[in-house]
Length: 108
Length: 122
Image (cartoon, rainbow over all chains, first blue to last red; front, top):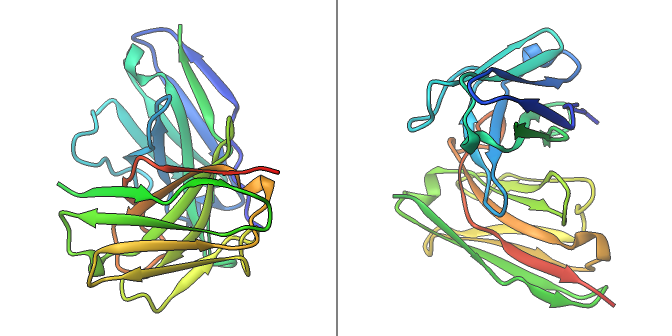
């Protein structure tokens, strides 16, 4: 089965840039979506189709995808960005959705 | 505004059954695939099942295949998840989510409900 690997945690100071990686075999050939989940809340999509941004999501959130790694970049990090982040793809070989292992972003 | 409201969660013994519902409003329900995603306490997101907008195509994760059944009633804008032979490791918050497209596949889940809690205990 297809596996997406994320770092368990990323720490960043306010105003700096956080980069969250999502590793998968040839993930660059797939369409990657990113979700933010604040404590006690439902997930919210913050980036989709690799690098598109849904309406209402700040421009500080940007996605990229190439080779074996997709990346969500959060620039000018704010306290409100502290949350868990998950990448997600559709694996056509198994007809399964796959979520990454999740990354907890801590704002110092 | 699109809204999804889950219901039907609760306490159940191992081997028991539950039927979850997800009531949708603010959208043409039949035009969108719908997904169930669960999250065990303190764990990450786990995809459970997806159904196409017309209800003809369904997929399941390996962990629930043969025990859970996804369905929808487009006349009532409602999504269901029938859960049988429940096990302790099915304990989780269950979210329903709307896809941006009619079929499963590469579309993101762009609207989520607040979730309903299922606890399987002996």
